[in-house]
Image (tube, rainbow, N blue to C red; front, side, top):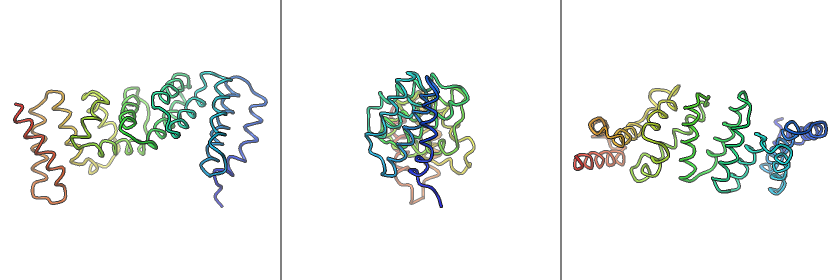
Length: 246
C-alpha cells in the first residue's frame, strides 16, 4: 500500500518535533521548517487547514532569520496562496544566499517548482530569469525543469505574446538560454516555433540579414502544409515588417 502524504507526515512529525526539542538555532529551524512542509503536505491531502502551515515557517525564521529551508518553503507556500511575486522573490533570494553550496540544488528545485506550478505572464518571465541565472552560475537543471521551461517559449512564440516575454532577458541571454535548455533533448524536439523565436532575437540584436534568412527558411518549410497556418502567418508578417523597415 502506498502511503498518503498525511500518513507520511504523521510518521515524520514525532521525529521532527524531537529534533526541535534537542536543537537550537539553525538546526532547530531546519526541523521546524520541515514540520511546516509536512503540514503543507497534509493540507494537500485535505487533512490540515491552510492557517496551520505558515506559522511553522514564521517560527523557523524567528529561530534562524536567514534559514534557507524556512524562506524557500515559505516562498513556495506564499506563491501557492497567490501572494505578490516580489514578496516571494525576496524569500528565495535570502534562501539562495544562505544555503550551503551542496544543498543549493534543493532550493533551486523548490523555487522553479513553485513558479512552474503558478501562472501568469509575470511568473513566466521570472521562470526564464531564474533558469538563466542557473545557466550563468553553472548550476544543474533537471531535464524535466528544462523541458517545462522550454514550454514557456513554446506558449509565447506568437508576436503579440512574445513582445511581453522577450523583455524578461536581453536577446543575448535568451539566445544563450535556449541551447542550455535544449541540451540533452532529442534533436527532433527543436520545432519551427523555436526557430521563429531565434529569428525574433537576432532581429532584436540588429542582425536583420540573419533574421530574414531564418524567417524565409521557416516560410519555405511551412509553405504547402495545412496544419501550421498560424505559424506561417506570423512568419510572413515578420518578413513583411522586416522588408518594409529595411
